[in-house]
Length: 262
Image (cartoon, rainbow, N blue to C red; front, side, top):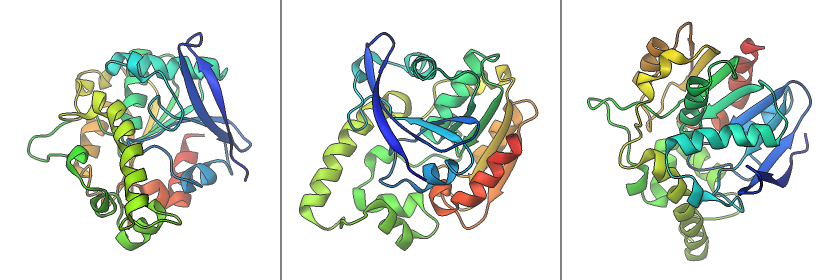
């Protein structure tokens, strides 16, 4: 399945956003996590076998620009709707992973009649002091695979296609790109990934599926219960032998879970 990309104007040209898209089927709007999208992203490819996927990159990621205008969670949430409008999408299946799940949940809460189907994949946005979430801003590049994957060795290969985390040039390029990405992500996730979402979950009307990797070491699966309690009628699906990047370790299992929302 061919995935292409284009740069679109958003909010009357205030922002320019890179959108990856491809596939056939009903529209699916995908919001990425703090790491952005991987090269030859396995999850996007798997989704595109069943949906027409639209996966925008937040400003601050690759050549998407306008991050200086996204100051807080409300700006990020409205930006999501601006991108949907620019793409001409009306009530697609909205899927968000991690930080993207936080944004997707906020979108569904702030305008509950605009989103009818919602999938939250290991979403951020709630903070339990007794179960602290790992501080991604303090991690070294070599530490990410341990927290993101159940199979760490396979995760290293996914994160560094054709590269080596011990190669100075590759590491420098990774850190430069990561610094810009985390500059955007920090507005939502630093110092802790909590902006009051738990108090707004009750507003969500969408038919909601929450998906978690059983071995998530970044955002513990205990957080799934908080989303299930907060969103009326939400269902939980746990995927075994998968970590935080469940969509990359078990893409087909995740897609089959999402298809229950069709």
